[in-house]
Image (cartoon, rainbow, N blue to C red; front, side, top):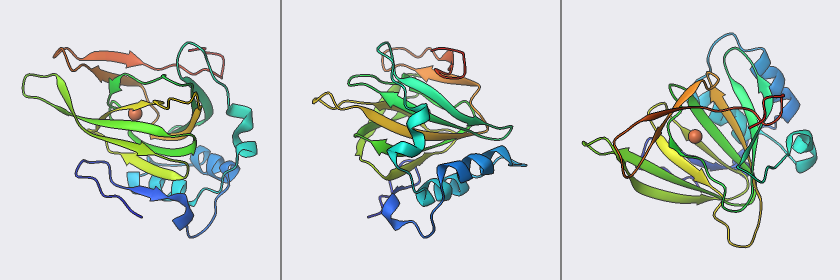
Length: 195
Ligand SMILES: [Fe+2]
């Protein structure tokens, strides 16, 4: 199954359609060795080729009671990769990626993603919501505005692998009730920064 949204999210690809397998450590080395910012399609292809099991990312699989945890796997000059761990009810603000592309692979649980448009007055309004299960890869292009959530009612955790290129700096956050755009600098949970 391939889903082509009407939004700028390019596609959602089940991992089972991968042609060749790439390990997490191989992808980590690839990101470290980049000499230019990869395209959205390149990163989508990497993630669609990943053969990944929980034991491969166990070293980064940390949760927080306060908010979803952002665990750094690798940060190079041109891209970074993180494992995000979400308890039930945890969510991002409504945001864009401040000039970076972003690709997500759902590792465990169900991810809810809501896409937003900017209204002429400046606030945002939702136009599509998706539930993405394990193995699904989605990509967000530079101007996309979205929110990711663990909305599962059964207490199930959500674990997602993310690649941003170039690495995230300052994100823009939006509101459905205000035209004000705020700026948000994300920190890492692992790597000494805390969240
Ligand atoms: Fe995002």
